[in-house]
Amino acid sequence: MFRIFRKKRDKTGGTQAGQVSDVQLRPVEIAGIDPLERRLGKTRTSLGDTLSKLFSPGVMLDEDLLEELETTLLMADVGVSATLEITDALGKGIKAGVITEASQLLPAVQAELYELIEPSEQLLQIDTSSKPFVILVVGINGAGKTTTIGKLAQRYKEEGLKVMLAAGDTFRAAAVEQLQSWGERNQIPVVAQATGADSASVIFDALESARARGVDVLIADTAGRLHTQSNLMEELRKIHRVMGKLDSHAPHEVMLVLDAGTGQNAIAQAKQFNESVKVTGITLTKLDGTARGGVLFALAKELDIPIRFIGVGESAVDLRPFDAGTFINAILPIPENP
Ligand SMILES: Nc1nc2c(ncn2[C@@H]2O[C@H](COP(=O)(O)OP(=O)(O)O)[C@@H](O)[C@H]2O)c(=O)[nH]1
Ligand SMILES: [Mg+2]
Image (tube, rainbow, N blue to C red; front, side, top):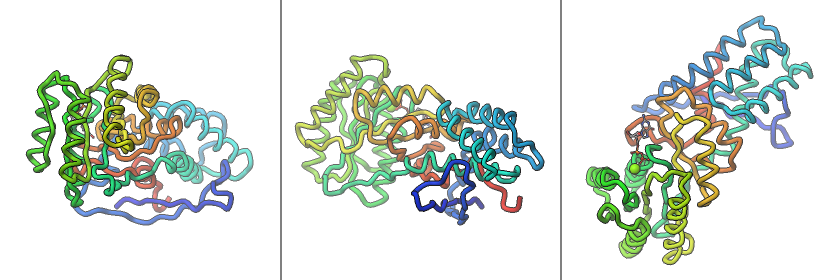
């Protein structure tokens, strides 16, 4: 059993620094799906277990403790600015006498972390009147773009939507094949051209075809371009422009896929992609294989971009809509009877 909390906000709309929030617990459990706490085990160990040990009963609430908290957060890739915000708030709470004993520390850190990522919890809403609602998927090689597209396609199809895919990564033959095999397995049409074809023209064709067929969601793959290569960024902008000729609102979502295992580098990638094409949503993949899951906090702190999904494994159910409370409870659980 794992638990999720919803924090009660004070009348000013937020909790004051250092205030130990009133935490409400309610259980959530989904049959047949591995609980998130198991999938996020490595980050849970690096962050949750370390903090639980650090905040053991009787610990002195002093500078050393705050320093160790800082080190733990930084080691879990929470990032400098988010880490400082949290240690500051805790320090103030201790100074103000709001936090007086060790048992208050874990809930206080949990509340601060929750506060940080709660604004990033914004589900991707598919507007089915768009016909098609276009999702352009971008990110560097190996981030998990094509896999994420496959999972998304399956999810939307199961929800009863008419889905189509565009094999816009024309650089690698394997990329087209990978998408086609997902399409075949799920009976979802894939628009593709030969390797080396112009990516923008593949996506343009797909958009035309999707419009003609009354498709609800068109998901377009792109090459795993290096974010430092300006010619590749230029190609992304071209795709954007070309789509706009058919539908001035397309793409409706520019989804950046980031590999959590790359840690702080993911932040740099997000900033660079966002400068070239306005990113409207993030999917953070491979959280199951890394202890660097804290990078999600750094992303939330440093970029004002919704986090749509998290990837916690290879199958379709392992792409989960991002829910801040479930995420926090999975990596930093509060013992039920402390
Ligand atoms: N464990 C795990 N592996 C993933 C996840 N997402 C993607 N992968 C794997 O990451 C590798 C690269 O994914 P791919 O979709 O080809 O990346 P792309 O180059 O961005 O299209 C593949 O082996 C995927 O199976 C995830 O959430 N968890
Ligand atoms: Mg790919």
